[in-house]
Image (tube, rainbow, N blue to C red; front, side):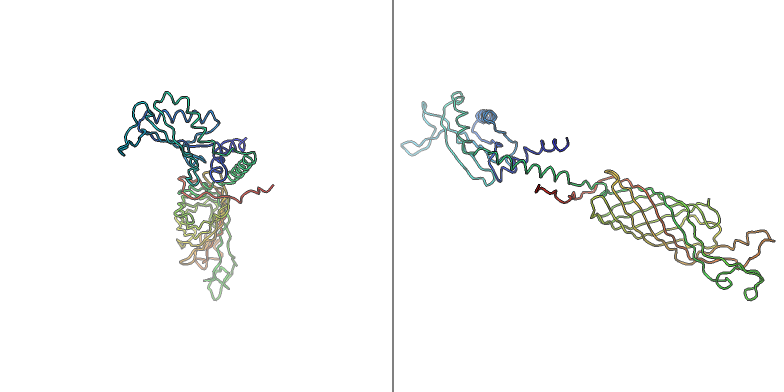
Length: 384
């Protein structure tokens, strides 16, 4: 049904534009001038009526028609024996209408002729004759011509169907929400540890007992809320708020951070956008189990988005972040125990290097369309 409706709407326009360059047709434009307003209204009204009666469609503009019927009504001026031009004498025709047929594609004047008259009343008998004399030089449309026009309309319909609405990926602002699953790696540093891995009791050189420790990996859920501004077609800036659960001791602790991301948008696919980005994170809430925690992290990632309606996109986000400006320093957990259970109280702190691999799935909703050229898919195969 959609294709039939589109075909019906496009057929007259396609036929008009095609015929203007390739074939004559039944679409004409009528224009004229006259010394008197009543003469102009009379001939414009009657020529349009004659066009309708003869099976022509009168268009609103010249560019929609292959030909133009043009008229001009003026006084009939004659040259007397004295060489002076003046109004024709009483009893002779007082007015003249000049009619021409123009080919709109190149403004070529196909035919021009004059007709003399004295009153509008007498012209009722001649309007049809004058109009048909003008348009008789338009060759009739053949069956082959109609087939050609229909084929062109079919191609236009197919092209319309393959125009891609890319508004979903061209918004000035996006509001983003995602469910995240960050995996945090605490890479153990050997500073102050026996053999680079051991807590101990006693002295470093002569420990009473030791307990080896290892790297720590924490995987807990989180979420991100953010606002993205598409500064240029290829460049976006996002500010977001991140939270996730857990530290290395307490799974209910809530970590919070602010982040900024600079994205480069690859929009070369109809329903897909790849956006690699650089990221910067500032940590707002740090667990008390840490004595020192680097406030900043840097890194990057890639966001893959797919159409989620006209206004937004579903996306998958993968990133890697690394905390810099020093180690993540944790209090020795044995020092928090009762006096008799502090089996390995030294060193007081444990040093780690912190990094995160983040995986997120979410949706972003866009507002305010950016002006971009609509994309097209490959033209459909029209050889069949």
